[in-house]
Length: 335
Image (cartoon, rainbow, N blue to C red; front, side, top):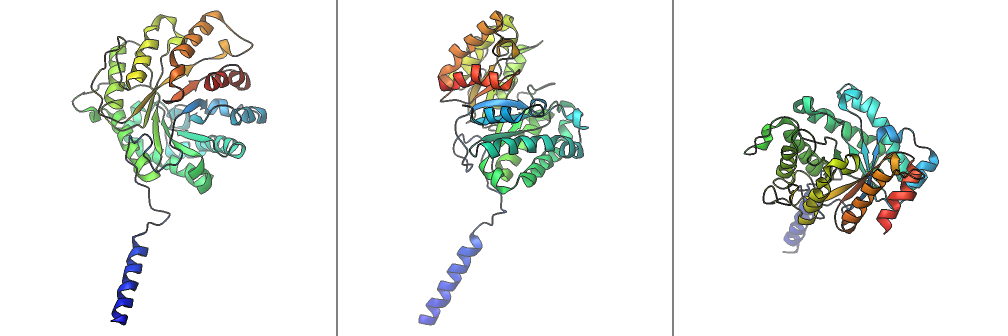
C-alpha cells in the first residue's frame, strides 16, 4: 500500500510540473479587457506622442525632462512605411534602431516609463502584405531590448493609421484590408505578445466626415480589436470644426462613438476604452502664445480635464519639448 501511494504521489508531481508553462510560452490575453489583461502595466493613460523624427533631435536634457514629467505613457510614432522601403528589412534596419534608442533613453531614466511601440504609418496600399513584416519588426525590437525592458516598460503597440481609407462594408468590415490587418495584429499583440493595443484616429474631418466617424464607431464599438481608442478632435488646427470638440467629448463621456450631434453611431458591445487627444503645437509652446491657437487649446483643457484620471488621454505636440512639458502638458496632468 505504501509503495502504491508513493508511485501515485510521484505521478501527480510529474503531471503538475509538466502542466506548468515555460517562460517562452505566450501569455494569452483577450482583446478589450481594459484592465483585465495579464500585462502589469495596464491602467489609465496620461500620454504623449513622440515621433521618431522628434526622438532623433532630443538632447540629454530633453530626455531628462520627459522622464521627470507628469506623463505616464510615451507613444512612439514612426514615419510612413514607404520611408523604410515598406519592407521588413527596412523596418528592422532603419526604423528599429531609433525606436530602440528611445526606449533605452526613457527606461534608463525612469524604470516605470510605459512605452508604446508604433507601427510604420500609411499602410493602406500594402495592408494585405503587412502582417508579417510588422510582426517581425516588433519581435526584433523585443529581442534587442531584452526581457527586462520588454516586461517592465513596453505597455503595448500603437497602430499608426489615423483613418480607414477606401470602402467599408458595415455588414462585414473585415473586407476592408486595413481593418483586417488591425484584427490580425490585435491577435498577435494580445495572444502572442501579451500586450495592449492602441489606436489614435482623427474625428470627422476631410471630404466625408460622416464616414470617418462611422468607421471609427464600427471598430471601437463593435469589435475588441483595440484596448484603447483615443480620438483626435483636430479643432486646434482648424477653427472651423469646433463641433468636433463636443463630438469627441460625447464619444468619451458616453464611451460610445457619436456623431457631432451627440447621437451614438451604433450600440456599443465592445470593451474598448475611448479617450480624447489633446492637441498643441509650437504656436503655444512658451514663450509663444498665439491668441487664436491658445484660445482653442484652453477650450480643450476645459472640455477634457475631467477625463485625465478616468480615461485614456494622449497629447500631440511639437516645438521645444522642455517648454511644451513645463508650460502646457505637465500643468494639464497635475491640475
